[in-house]
Length: 511
Image (tube, rainbow, N blue to C red; front, top):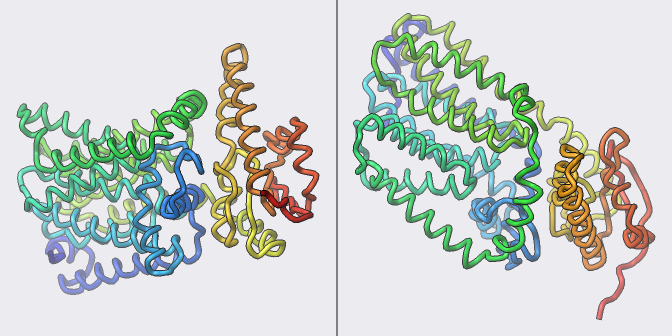
């Protein structure tokens, strides 16, 4: 596919068609260069570091939900298996292998989406602009949330959405199958994504009133992949269904912030602004349908998914923000052609993208500063530490574990059982049932912690000990067995709210 430059847009931008084409390719190359530079300067996201480590443990034949506990379904780990396998095969770090995989996936997604949108006459001459904008959006804008499940899921889902946006141009059979597989893998990565194709298909049905569209080649391909995945979960990961899922259903999934609190978060305000401007531009068009409609509907569905999760984690809103920006961009292209106002609209769309980037950069900046300092402390104490964390923050141990060449001896990345049950009890102080749930899961969490310390014999323990929030070190010290276990450790350093303990003697010899 070539990337022609609009004969209308080029003069408005003050360039000849050839000059505009060169400029767009230079911008795309610059965007890729900036994305690569950001990867060299940014730590691996804490969630990504844990899930990538879990994928590597699967390759080492460790059992999920037995040897380690991941609160999300197995697909959350399986989606990182290709990167873990590639790193093992090429003897490179899993983090670098993951970045290579995501860059490759983003390139394929960019090519597919730009090619699909170029089948529309109104967009054919603007495919270079679209490709450049997608490169910035998919590789630069994620910032610290790069390679999160939301990021990977969006990359996998975009081709299917692009096909929904251009239904009159039926692609090659292989292309449709690949788009269906991508959609299914997005759902594997994060089950919530199933709502996006469900809503888009429902909207398509109201327009065409043809049930046969549900059995399209891409949908059948997706259905086969999802059926295989469900069978895999049932037969290969039964412990997730019998052990982790009941616990998560009782204390993790119900732990939510209020809807009012979610609506006050910065990413919510940003999405509402993007959606409002997009709808305003859409209403200026005379046609009853628009290529941007599918992306706007998908964005609104993504926003609904964000609200349904209720965790207050703004990266959960990443797919809806990015899909909204694509819808906004497509409407801006139409507006540029109609009003010849390329510079003004380009600046506005650029500012929107910068706002998204800033949102994600600022979100985890404080955590990364703490991680870098902890890495210095731990590396100085032990060149190959055996690590365990006591706290409700996953970023205490990850990506530190990977950056220090450490061995994670704990079965969990953080104390999610105690954290969830405590949250529920605090938000419902009059509930006797939730008070009992808290006590029960406190006992279970302590049992798991004691076993991990005794069997894993960590050389370094990182404990969250805050005076302004929950002190998980104080929580752990309420138990006499933990106090006894900690006699072999001494406090050697404190970094912000994390106390660093080092083992003072050798691990006991076990028969």
